[in-house]
Length: 302
Picture 1 (cartoon, one colour):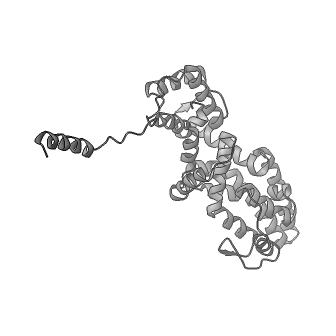
Picture 2: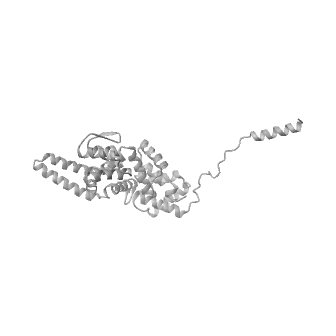
Picture 3: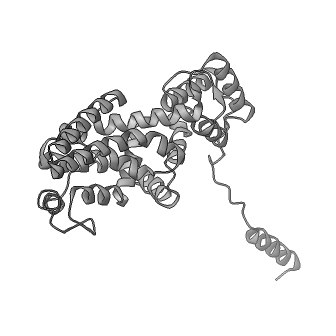
């Protein structure tokens, strides 16, 4: 073998052994600096309406659009804007603060979801009736009946207290929803045990109960019989609501409800699993909202 041929062979072997750059085509990070001002204004406007129930004032619009622009409209900057609208306690004329306006809006949305948007004035009126009946029964010596009336009064009173308690973190998203399905208003909307059980599953889990789940729930509510539902035991209506609201499916339902509310569609299995697991671990529903609302799909940047 000639020397020249040997050198040529070594040269080609060296080339073939060189590592190739792992370049994935069309995998560049999106650049949002060129998003039009109109799209940014539409995004800011939508964030205010969905979180606070109102459009931004002119000064708010200018400031927030500029903030996004200065930060190249990154996902992180959108999250910062949304976090401000959820948690900023600085005084805002007409709202008291973004924080107060946001949690009032969210409280109203949950009431719309579960008790047909019953106003606090309506709940107060119903509560006055329960207290009057309780007082009359007490004066008549019908104490067993009186205590039942008092229980209904306290259930509605718990709804009225839930807005502030949820905002302050003294109750969880679980307890907020449990209170909304455990009261006389929800009972009147979904009259009788048959409708009640189906409504709870449909409203919270986006499905109807299996025959087994329905029968177990029915026995717990109507007979106060100890039964097993979703792996937990209970023997009354309160137990049914507590078990369902503490299930993993409840978190899955929250994610699905959020996608429908903000994107007009149900979450796919990947989206549900990701955000549901995050919600179970961190118990931070507001983070779930921000994750959806900071997306390109929500902002119409894609």
